[in-house]
Length: 240
Length: 297
Ligand SMILES: Nc1ncnc2c1ncn2[C@@H]1O[C@H](COP(=O)(O)OP(=O)(O)OP(=O)(O)O)[C@@H](O)[C@H]1O
Ligand SMILES: [Mg+2]
Image 1 (cartoon, each protein chain N blue to C red):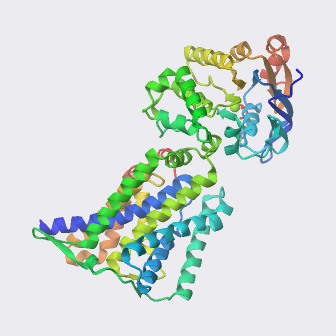
Image 2: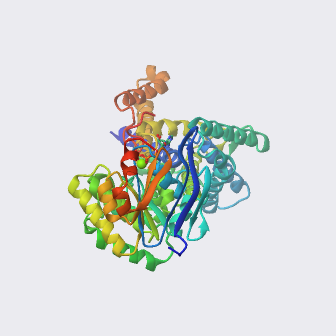
Image 3: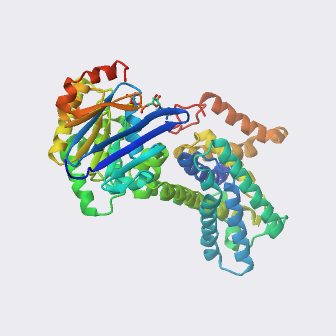
């Protein structure tokens, strides 16, 4: 690919005290792509995504988004720039209604037009959220909360949406719905970075992927390539 | 029966003031985990503003909003100067910072104004009373109840309808994720302090209206009570703070009115005993905050 990537990270390191969770990784996500990050528990996938949106600080390295250095930009400035995350464990605001959650998703969006467009798109994608709009988010089922978390993230009209384990803890048929949704998002030209435990499904929707183990990237390639490499299995068996 | 009605009005007036103060503590605590012991000094600042306005001959209808504004400005300034540098610090760090702020302000009041209690000029209307049937109710009590209700309605509207208010509720639940939505940390925290200042200012006007005086330690007792009320209601829970404030007001007023003469000496310990008893059965308070509900505080 010749165009500059939408997002790129070089030498990214994340530390929690003495623990080095991410140990200097390089990766990139291009406009229009779906990129997946795979790896066993504790591989450093969430730490990577969280560092991209400044929820945890990058100890070393650099993150560029749309050509701008966003390594140390405060999280609240990223959504207006078009970068956001639907975090692991959904983390919807349980004491806010569905509608209020969605409104908060668009908090940083100045243009009323953009807000309306995002609102329409979310209601289009998730009719159930419209139905439940006056309900407290805490009373939704897990699948509905995940839809709300994704819908809330979409409300800022992101150029790049990061999803951290969107299928975590959901019943199999709901997992199918979430992946259908991801396919729909691609049709709407949303660029996606997805962390998943569900490797088969992730590689089905993704264009490319990175496999992480012990805070490092141990394999990368197109989805088709990754389906074949034994590095993938090795990473899940704890090797690196 | 008349005595009972009378005391109920008193309890509502006092409980309402506690509720406003507890609410101010809870708004800040829910968002940044800080128990602001300097909340009382915000009241004192309002009290002195009323006093100086009285001396300068400013009409009461103007000095009241000025006094409230003074508490709001002081609250926001307090955050900027004292609490922002320790933001994200441990609960103990922030608590001690707030003690320091309170003490510094008390010393300043003592040295720059006076260590003694000063009279505050109030409009004569406030000391009049209305007779309804056989019940005599002070205008200041009615004003306190009306002001409390207005503030509670205003705050409810603000937190549920205004974008900033909703953002404050979101930030109270999950600060990091709220920031991810584009909600600026500084905005919600400054907003929380402004609201706590507003509530402290209104409470101060009500407090001074019952006493017509102000001294450097004026805020200490009511805020200590408000702190008890906030814990009683469930620390960090806004509805809890209101419920706790009213309950404490009722406990105090009813004990003072209906406890036999020989037991009056033990009124405060008995009141606190009731509080402790309630907390024994509901350790997280009457209406626990949904965020802290499952966590042992
Ligand atoms: N807040 C934290 N404080 C200390 N250590 C942490 C923290 N968050 C993560 N870690 C550690 O960092 C390492 C990487 O964690 P991370 O959550 O990034 O992994 P992950 O790949 O997302 O795993 P999972 O599949 O379980 O979500 C783990 O060893 C974890 O224990
Ligand atoms: Mg994770």
